[in-house]
Image (cartoon, rainbow, N blue to C red; front, side):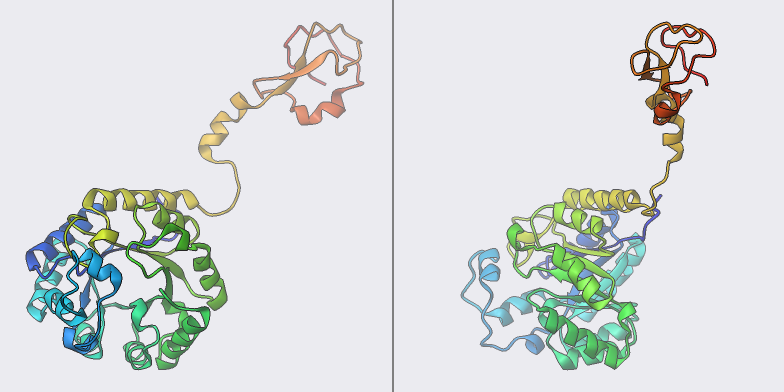
Length: 339
């Protein structure tokens, strides 16, 4: 169906399972039913990514239902998926015919995911300035998706350079534009920056979407995004840091349908008459005809000629060839002119 490149759609389940394996499996089902290519979780050891003093972001407190009583560590411990959970989800993804994907947030988690045989790795926005992390990721020699929320062009350049130096060429790094706020305000999206990133670094690009709704992701595909990532939840009103910026199941399905339509609509970029247009050309175009009865020998003029459908006779683009010539026979009104 599509002439263009297949857009990789990642349904970001993230931590929207709220620590429940059953809920995580239901998110896999939702992503598979919506037609996403991958469903992505988050792999971390809470104690490895946040110190006891790390405070939650304002959006995390707000979206967790005002639980400001504890810090990031306690929140993350509630959301951690253990190894058995990972294995169960990988098996469930295989059963549902959707790719399993996860973002590692610490070095041990990266090693663990590499051991699971992941084909690609994701750098979350918060790790774009973490050199040891970028180097380890590059050393695996896998395809990389790099999120750039909060980053400047200079920081993106340094991250790409670090990954390349570690062994992954930029042709295998897809850079995602992103606005790190949940939900992201529309006026802060700056979607054209995604295209700027692609041309600045000569990399495939995409969009990690934290806005409400599905329009921005679909628009990103129209602008050339090859990867779209969007959070999915079973219910936006659930407590938890990311639910508020997530799509519910029917919305995810609508977004994927929209992306697939735009993907097919983008086409080759060559302007040519299509098969269906060819059938309609004669009907829609016009021919030069007599605007009134014309006698043999009379000169054709702007007065006795007009253009009318169908386009089966002389094209009106030949008007100047016809005007001033003598009629070689009588023509009835509306009859197509012949030279």
